[in-house]
Image 1 (tube, helix red, strand yellow):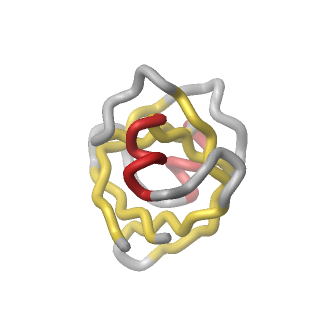
Image 2 (spheres, rainbow, N blue to C red):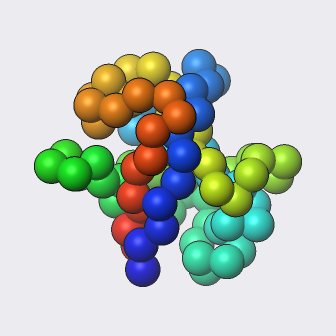
Length: 82
């Protein structure tokens, strides 16, 4: 399963992790601590999931370092794969 999400920058997200909404985790059938693949056209990276209950289901939070590693920017879109 794949889903496109809008990037939000948040400095409290750890390196190697992405933060997703609780509702999205339930919809996808995954839990905090699971590994998912985050894809930006030619770059793919396995990352650990963190959970935040008040986030939008359409967004993914990354720290600035991971945004640079995935060669993207805030408000762009990334794809997640399970």
